[in-house]
Length: 334
Image 1 (cartoon, rainbow, N blue to C red):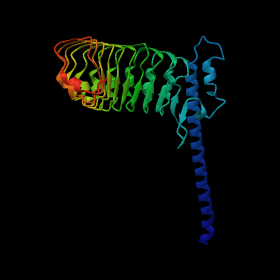
Image 2 (image 1 turned 180 degrees about the horizontal axis):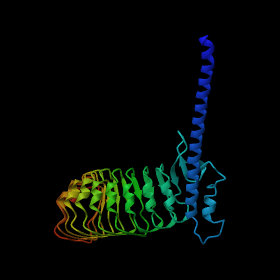
Image 3 (image 1 turned 180 degrees about the vertical axis):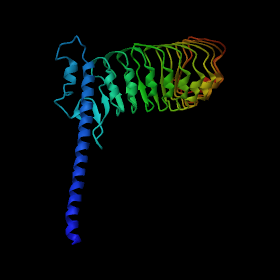
Image 4 (image 1 turned 30 degrees about the vertical axis):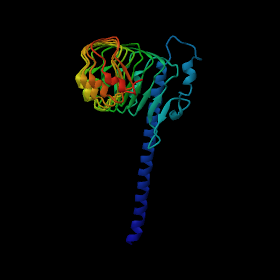
């Protein structure tokens, strides 16, 4: 008697379970569809910013390049410059349009792509400001905007991109204003490239908080003030170049603590006083350029301890005294 009742009950339970599984699958599919649709709409909005409003030529280079960025092509992972994850769902994680001769501006809509890891718009003809909305890309690991015609200040909001490892926005001659002190919060930053802009103000002392920094490229700007001694805290630094600025004051002796440094270029500033003997502690240094400053006093003998040094330029200063004879035995100098 009990088996005759339990059999229909079991069937009903199995049917109910099957319905729940089907509803879950439909819901997941709908979420995936909505996510893909949203990403497509965002990229189509980004595409609009690449077309100047006064350009009515439908055959211009931007249209030809991004002709596959279309609602007629719903597989956005096949779009030019787009990289996606394959599992568990297709998510846009990379956008690389470097060297594509793109004109226009950078759309704030890019800030609506929370899963983006890599953004490369370098070597184009983009103009206008860097949108503060890019600070919403909380997962971003690399940001390349160099070699464009971007203008205005660097948004300090970019200092909230805590996962950023590489930030290169140099070679934008119309970028002005200071280096944001908030960049000192980029604890995972390995490379900071800000060369060949029109940046002003001091080198922020907060950059000394970047314990993983290996490349600090600040040359060819209008930076002023002293070199912060705090940069000696960047113990993994390999390259530091701040040539062609308006830096003044003395060279901090604390820089001698940068024992992994390979290249130090402080040429063509207005640095004064004596060359710190502590620079002789930079045992890995291969290139040292201090030309075109107002450095005084003798050439420190500890510089002859730099056994890996291949290039040394101290010309166009006000140095006095004799050249240490030990330089003659440094056969590696070119």
